[in-house]
Length: 363
Ligand code: 1CP
Image (tube, helix red, strand yellow):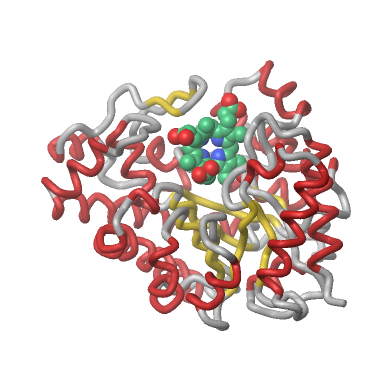
């Protein structure tokens, strides 16, 4: 049965993702549903993190919080969930206290036997699909809904490190000591990502973003050997599965944080429609690297939001000039260069949105 959804009233994001010129840049921010919002913290006092992810009405409510608060200023919703639902679906325990913690991480390749041999995403992750379908209805077409997952390399590092890390010692030990087993595990994670992303489109996601948050921890050579093949597999297999089921394609964004050195190879070979960039590369340089056939997303340093109204306006103006080069915005989705952090005043984020509206407009 195909579900029908309310018609979309604001398609700026989808047009920019397809590389088109837009009257102004569409804008949203990574982690826009999160701890900087008092209304989010209020829900969190009553519910555990993964309890919210697994409860479609609550996940929907939190997804809509920034859309309501910034109505008319924000051009996309991103479903409230986490990248770590995939390791959970593969059979690993993940706690959030307050950062992610895996009580039983993968220490050596023999631990791979602990993972589920077959992962049925419809069984394990149906709650994400239900949250997407409900949220797409509740959005009433105001803005498009983004689905997402973590990239294999980023998920692999959490599954092996057992949580966040500054050094990546354990996950890199795997890459260099057990390269073949590492590649096999990365592809196994990628296959779960593929089925999860296809399921998200069927459930109502209108754009998909893959977060390779730890891409920049790899040398360009290792990114090409270990991460990029699994990312290409995802873009290719998602598209072919959607085509095989006669489901319309959706744009796909790859955010490989810190992988600036690999931008041109990602543009040429990764198969994504949009590449996310962080603030360590100037937009004009990123555009030169990727050429004109792919869209870009980014890239304000999230910490600029702590600098006060004047600094925010100045830096947004600079970002807009660098992306636009005096022309109307084309193939550009304005965003931060990483997730918004918990201490930001929501009114400063509002000002960021207002400045993007002002300085990205084609005039
Ligand atoms: O206590 C809490 O409420 C936990 C805070 C929190 C939130 C709000 C976590 C724990 N996850 C989330 C939501 C989340 N995570 C979203 C929701 C949609 C939105 O963007 O609004 C998304 C897209 C993510 C993705 C995610 N989770 C990433 C990729 C993006 C990024 O910032 O690099 C990563 C790396 C995670 C892991 C994770 N989950 C939570 C935390 C604190 C972390 C990072 C921990 C670390 O630094 O290792």
